[in-house]
Length: 155
Image 1 (cartoon, one colour):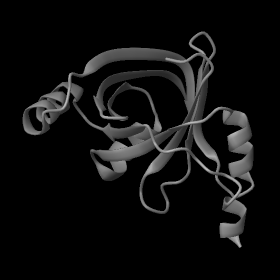
Image 2 (cartoon, rainbow, N blue to C red):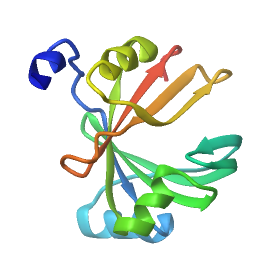
Image 3 (cartoon, rainbow, N blue to C red):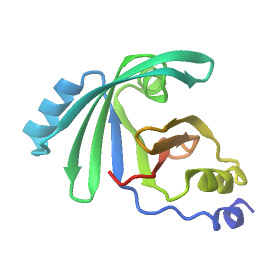
Image 4 (cartoon, rainbow, N blue to C red):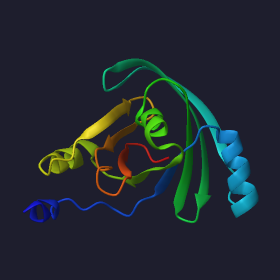
C-alpha cells in the first residue's frame, strides 16, 4: 500500500553527498591526500534563531565543498548549536549523513511526501539568498537522511 502512495513523488538524481565530520580541516586533508578530491571551498556560517527539536539558538557550521563530477561532496562540522548533524555525531560518529536533491517547489514536494508519512525534521528558508531546504525523516530505513533544496535563484 505504501508503495502505491510513493509513486506520485519522484525525486531527481541526487546532486550532493554529505559527510558529517568532527574536524573539517582534518577531513579535507584526508580526502585530498588519499583520494585526490578537491579543491575544497571552505566557509563558516552562523544563523540565529535556528530550531531543532526542543532547541533554539545560533547554529554555526564549518563546511567544505568539492565537486566529484556531477556530485558535490559536502563536509559539515558543527561548531555551535543543535542540528541533525550534531545529533548524528553523538549517535553514530562521523559518516555519511545525507543525500541532497534539488527540487523546483519545496513546499509542494513536502506536501506530497507528507501524504506518505515523510516529514521534515529540520527546515529553513534563507530569504535573502533565495534558498530553502528541508531534511527528511528518511534515515530510519537505510540510515541516510534526504535533504531537499529549492533555489529560487540559480547558484
